[in-house]
Amino acid sequence: MEIQGVNITYIMGNILSYISCVKEYNWNDRFCKENTIENLKSFEKALSKIDFTKCRKEELLAIGCSMWCIESNLVLIPIWLYRCLPNGTKLTSIMGNEKVIGRDEIDTDIRGGCMAFGLIIED
Image (cartoon, rainbow, N blue to C red; front, side, top):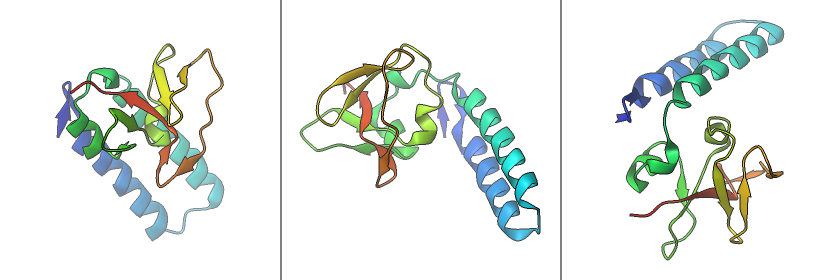
């Protein structure tokens, strides 16, 4: 699957392969942590090329986002996606409050795999 020219399937496959290696091999904790952080930085850099505010709902759902409710256009985001969004991106909470990344404090607590914040998608 590609989004805006970025091969999401390839990136996610690489991350899953790395996670499998961590489980499979006897790497020490420090090595695992350092390499996991480096892999995540690479993942975030690749995904930061995507303007997620312009994605279709189906694309966001396919990469792990969730609809808040059927009556809403609010698509909740997983924490890994939050780390890929640039400063200035406007997020909306499940309570309807708007916050801006880089300006406002945003609670990154997750439930069911997603934060209580997301993007309003016009379909």
